Length: 212
Image 1 (tube, one colour):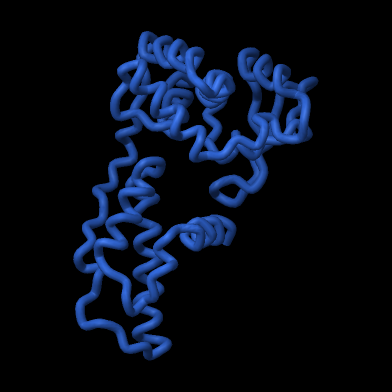
Image 2 (cartoon, rainbow, N blue to C red; image 1 turned 30 degrees about the vertical axis):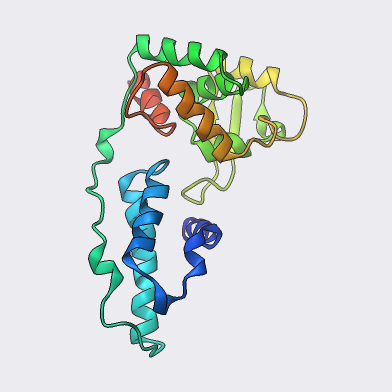
């Protein structure tokens, strides 16, 4: 399944892979939780912990590997799932966020935030979007291999289309920007705008609320 493969690839890139299953400790898992919680919803973070727990159980029950008596997963508390907590900005907060983005050391962040706010697109979808996937004539764009493993085409608002027209040169719309760099400058912009408890993913909730 594409979604599971994507999660496994992300785990492989994390430092937790430096620890063998026999030496895995609760503090390694809790560190992973803290890292992922910065950008992912509680339910998503729990899925990563469940995946690793399945590896532990498989190693013990199927492969017959002798593991420590103390199960590190028993000392890891899963996050309370309340995905409905998605934070929605007021118009005043959104205005302040855009102003903060205008003064960012990463100028392109303003257009990315507006595009996310106008389309409800996920961060990964935005950063992977290619100009070839944009249909300017019909005001559509297609995201391929999304989080759920599917492709989806969305209509574009006039503001979203205007941004895409400004970035229509090159292969990737937003110049191969790395997620961690976007996250860093987005967090800085939120602090400067005095906006608390707000993640990039919550721009998707703003879009859904505005669409009602």
